[in-house]
Length: 435
Image (cartoon, rainbow, N blue to C red; front, side, top):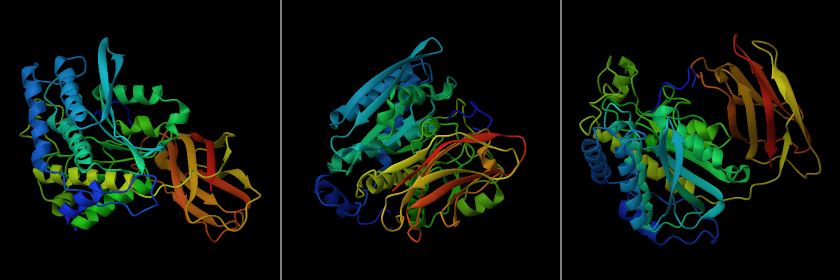
């Protein structure tokens, strides 16, 4: 994980049956069906990948950093596994700091090409160490989940894609390059991007990204099933590869077990471990080796990744719907009165849907200051986003889902935005309703 690029920046039950269901699932063209149960991801397999990454680092100057031979060897290792498992892989080259970098993309055959679900992790380390927790853990767990898709011969409703990013530690370079190369028509096909950066910290917490409600709920439901409490992830907010996707309007989510921040007494009571000590004392250090892993956290998070891929990737798909958008900029006064931007809906029958999509693009230098509401034609307000003094990242670019079934569809709907704290500014760039 790169933490220097910006200031603001039960579940394992009935496993044999789950594997059988996955192997015999109907094709994506079949009638809609309930999401399939995910298989268990063997922790031994994930750790075997980590051992390989450690060996690669040891044989190549002690690291797997961008521009170093250990990174290219890491890409080659992951690619060989995926090629043998039946994925279509491609290696994307870019240049950063005068050196060639690589992204690895792997597509699983089938699924709706207009609804892409992607999971990814950065594969590079810093130059000072092997980068086993940061981010061998995310890379290995995503790899093993992809291999589990192959073992099950999963037939998802959505198209599954996996990615391993280069030069994250230099400022999210690889993932930014990938997203910037995507035509806008391809970006709109993403139903979500799931990011996994540092998921086996030795003094772990259980943190869930809160950027997209549906993805967040998927991970929280998994941990509720285990009886493990979670917290909202803030330490790495906007500072790992999910930010590259979020900044172009792709829904994102993910998991994290903590980096250099200190575990509180309350967190130690909740999760175990040592209060007053960093979640990862070896963060960006030479001691980030295979000895720097908490097996329980890595096992749980690996299973959570599979749960998300199976749940989100095999759920019934729906047509994209009809959208009405307002692209006129509206300035949001600093610590001032609320402003609105209207969208007029006409020619529809009946009420709004139970899953009205509200796509929001608000540019703001401290999004924690911003409160957002959807205001129905009769004046009823639906809260989309509250303020949060801890949410220091830029911009609000996401899609909210509102149950507006009690409201007539036709009329003037408004996005209402208010800045409730001083010093930072922004504006409504655009927003849209999708029925």
